[in-house]
Image (cartoon, rainbow, N blue to C red; front, side, top):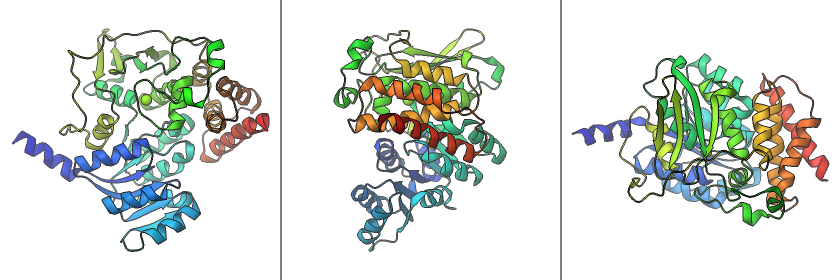
Length: 393
Ligand code: MG
């Protein structure tokens, strides 16, 4: 009876638009959608046409979007025998985010391309299952303001922020909250010094100890920039000051994050390192539905350990925490410069430590200003990328 009732919650729940369907989070989202018996309104990708075709045939969305025009033209030919319409570019992405039949939008695109469609979806009062942290880092104030104005929900998919969100359920007074503690795996280079980091290549940085993810975020985990972006994301999502966010290195990735309250009680959320749990919760919240992920076996999991981060070795984390205390464009510049630098690193054009050096250079050279509008944010992002490219040309 209880299980039947839960099933009903899941069934009636959601028709999903999935932005970034072919990436790691996108594919895991489709696993969850299929397992929970939900349906897909739209899927989008940059240019992975073969995979998008396969997903279209499996999930029958009414709209499929490629950011890349040539890829969209190819997809149109490939799926001409289906009822799925094809669109392209940022306009297509915005259309996917605002389809009338979709009640939830998963934003699993990489980078700040997610900002415009997220804002458009919020204005249509869609639930956002947020898996695009750059959106909150760059446009945090604008996004949260828009969500409040239109009464739309933002439920985090990032495992740490989902853990915080889960620990905060049942706390109704913001004043009760003392501190958010983000856990961090430490990445593949934990415990090493700058001399050791200097020699590392793309292949070394792409070996993550516990999580399986896309290339950009895996590099961000190696530099610890990912935790810096998540620090800013947490400040935005939960309206807390930088002094109320801490980071603990936790190599086992079992405790996904913790919340400390005024009475010094600490609540934590634990589970196997599998993103599908936080994806499922973002779609079914406030209900909990039958599990998609494996259970955590407390008797066979490794001892749980916590360490302080090394801010002097991992300069990207230090830069991000400095930006967290500065209003306006620095966070946009941090993110834009990092995206550009990681792109160059993934093309083997720069060395590992140069990522942090280029981000620092952009922060020192791009003039500061307000980041209240989409135009101001896009301009700061462009200037940051240009600063990185001009330095490496
Ligand atoms: Mg995370």
